[in-house]
Length: 177
Image (cartoon, rainbow, N blue to C red; front, side, top):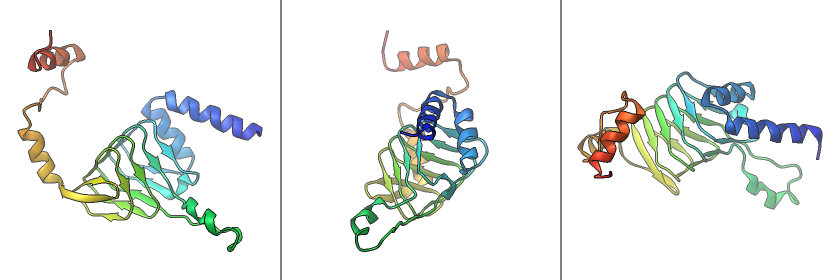
């Protein structure tokens, strides 16, 4: 183990405990283009972070992996010496990426998209899409998801309330004492 490797591991452990702003500053220094008003939880960015671009107002939930290389080239390294394959990843503006997603090389996620938890995303995805699955695919327009939210019996407009007020309303709604 080299000193550099130990320092990198220590830094990543610190970043995992840090807040979103600190994580964003760190990842920008590593070369990721990250827009304004983003929220990035504990996410794994690939060994080539400079190949990743994230737009404005993007939220990325914990456990998501961004992979910018294709490690399966390993199988051909005896035949093709020193081979590597890379691809860029671009995430548009106003995007939410759920927990434990995998974003593969050569992926473009358009503006105003939701990526469902656990999705494995590769390819080009248009604006205003809800994207889910393995492999991920567009399942509906974003406008339909908004309608589903608004018609959900567990939909609340309480974001501006204090945690105490929220708790009271939610517990009452679900009959929890």
